[in-house]
Length: 281
Image (cartoon, rainbow, N blue to C red):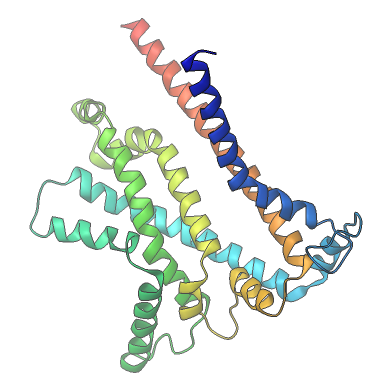
């Protein structure tokens, strides 16, 4: 056996071991979501009753709806603010405080969530004492906190795409009479659309998955799905949690496939348009 064949087989073995390490626990969780027994680690036969029990749990359904609404609103706001911040970082010339501005925008990337959650809690308490707002914490305070830390991830994604964008396309459009606003919506926005979608999905996932910051900024009437699951697991793991996790894996997988398909179509369309433009020239 040649040395290259040995290296190839070893690489495949390490790759398979890595995939097993990542996805075998998820596969086991999905399998045990169809378990008949109340014990999550004892197989007692195939059953779908825990899915029906899950849909009967109104508190779990309400928590899931709160998380979905919060994640959707957070992702939309984070994309808008992240795009504005990315434009400032990549399109504006150097101005006094630009380095500080960039550092403050990206600080939540390296800031521990406990520190972020505690600082947001102190902010809302101070606002309640000084201005009489945010006296009752709830979905609004969680939304502000989630936008604050997800915007950093969106800004990095969009700014990296803007920095690679060919500025000559924008300059050509302005030479033809288009103002900056029209150039952004007609030229820049379609090109960075895949980055916007990636940032939106990233912000949606981070908001949907967050537990620490939500715990600091939530109120008694606003419980998110991660908070509900954490409180349920502390009293013992229920097979309903396996069913819920399986459904979330299914929805996330479908969304990821659709996002990949959309970006693939956009890239193919862009390449086809470039080839047609080159042929016409």
